[in-house]
Image (cartoon, rainbow, N blue to C red; front, side, top):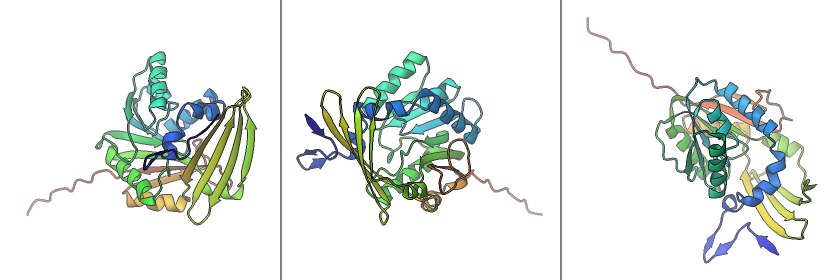
Length: 272
């Protein structure tokens, strides 16, 4: 049986791809591509780049199943994870409980953050930015980040690097997982809109098929720096990965580290 989850229709309401994709099938696709060793390296990089003191407050925005939030909590940070997928959050809660750590899990849309000047840092990792149909909606996410950060707080953004995506673009790919699952990817990239579309067909060993997709606005470093500036976030550095490697045209990942300006208190000058 084939199940289409790209754009399901219910009356006049369509389900966005970022609701359909992040269910149980996501783990079939990406589970083996995200081993514990990779997560450990990424968390080490996050900690080094943020350089925060112990017990600092961190928001993992689009936290997924807690792949980074839980280790950060284990390392002594006060962590909140927000995600739109209840499937992911259920896994995150269970994993955090099993590992004996406390994380504040929040179900919600990244365009609406229920926090005001609460965090020393916000992280957004593994291309969890650019999900929405319009640039204005993606910009709104950055406005929300600014509002949720404390003055002087940092924002760490990690996502695919558009320059490398274009240079090495492959329109088609097939891979087979160890359990026999075959994943077929059909990829398109529109250079004018900057949108990447990937249509996935999952073929299970028993013959079942599932169709999914993701449609991401992929921004250049120049565009991201301008967007961050419009949200009053000052870019401190760019890298080619969470390991703080140099950003080159061939860097597969793009990392941007930005800061919300600290409050400036003007001194009072007495009269002579």
